[in-house]
Image (cartoon, rainbow, N blue to C red; front, side, top):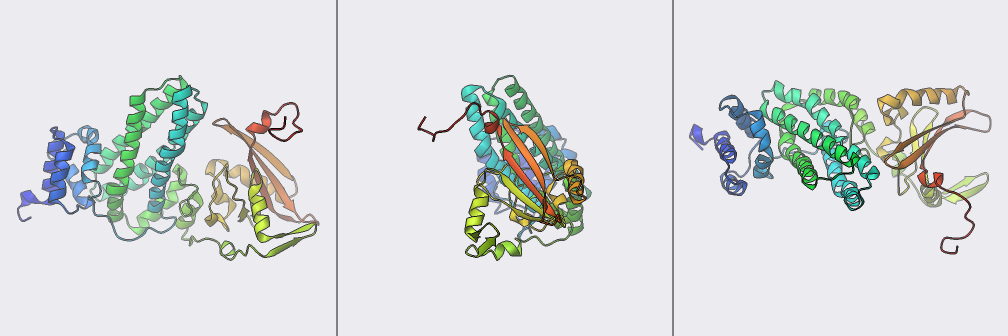
Length: 403
């Protein structure tokens, strides 16, 4: 394109203005596809910036149609080359979107259907409050990533995206209020879900290339170091994207599956004073227990966790060998550290905590592990969801179905 009026930015501005004038997205999308083989994120940022600063289009006007904008350029943005390394803030950001999408199509959809059918809201209310954890994802983007874009003159997309983030936050809050009152407005919930899914698309297709183009390795290190203060969501169970992986990357540690796990020989026999196991038998037995086990050794490193079918708290194998402080949020870390110190100095041998959430009653028990001479070897954490046990009454002495 030789004419300055036919540059990618000018053509894109023309298309966006036509959308704002009410032209159909399908018609504009066809023209976009015929005009561009692909467009870089910088051109999108520049087009939006010029519309706001030079042509008087307000941020709210762009926000109101940004889902249409995103649908037009979807799959047309030129993606950066290369694979993001494990624990990198951008890798975690992407995996959180995958986890969020899986949550919306999984637990959220199931619990919403149950609520619509019964108007019994306790479970769905907890699910909506879990959905609001997307605030952490948005807050890291807004407070840790956007400043670097703005520093490089990429100002319009952050403003527009932040406005949509706030809209999504309010939609979730209003949905929570509805369920607390036993109400359900289908139009409201549909709008909320579509906004969240559209933001996932915009972050993956538009924001990510802008971040890759504008943030330096030093910038990403700062983002990684500050991210735990805001928090993470929806990727805790994904190896390479867990909070402990994020902390490890910020410290410059290599993130790999432990050598011990890779070298595991399931046929090896394990002899104990009171019996013996084949390795696969011991593994299966520990994973069959109706509780989660985590062992932290005397040096404060995570050495083992069970992998039962249903876990109360997520763990990933990349956590093996990490310091226990990397496995707890800052707000509860001081309690864990104080407890471990009391085990080490012999002041305590066990401690219990319990929490209630979404109809679950979670019992968390900690035990000091000592050898026959009383030497401290570490801490065993036992976590179990016991709401069913708390409701037991009378007695049961026959097999199920034989009463």
